[in-house]
Image 1 (cartoon, rainbow, N blue to C red):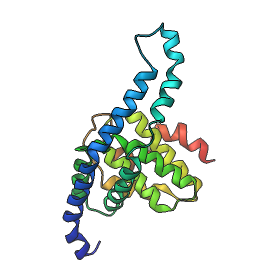
Image 2 (image 1 turned 90 degrees about the horizontal axis):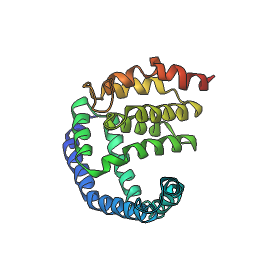
Image 3 (image 1 turned 120 degrees about the vertical axis):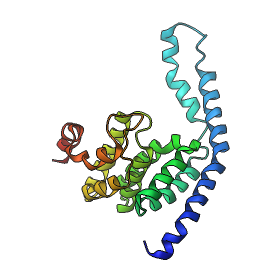
Length: 211
């Protein structure tokens, strides 16, 4: 990043924060509509447990029927955020993580990571690997590190099968990641990314699929 671009970074970070803030209310309304649709189809007061469990697929379909709401707009902002994250210094990356986790879009980070893996599967270029890794770094294992780890594995496999080599990109993203123990996992994200290819999960769940 040249000096001119570096000087523009604070303004761009602030602009991305405003973009996320503008999406808070649409995300809230969409989530509430999905919850209403699910609850209508899955009334916990109606019938025995077996019957309720049988209605789960119907309830899930009802929630999905609400549509994708603001997801496409959120993902477009994530594209910008992850592109900036992948070329920024650790301090800027920390600021971007904080901004994302201040807003409701944070709940769509796992979906965005899966989206990056799917785009790679469909012929996406290296940029989608970088975006997916940036999303994993920003997410910072704030929820369930096992889901985070599996999503990271899916991204790795998608990239590898496209003829890309994720190892160097993992190391680069590790340098930009949080070095503190996350709320949702046992290992700092910086270490988890840096040593992903040395992990037990990689050895048992990823490596056999690379052969």
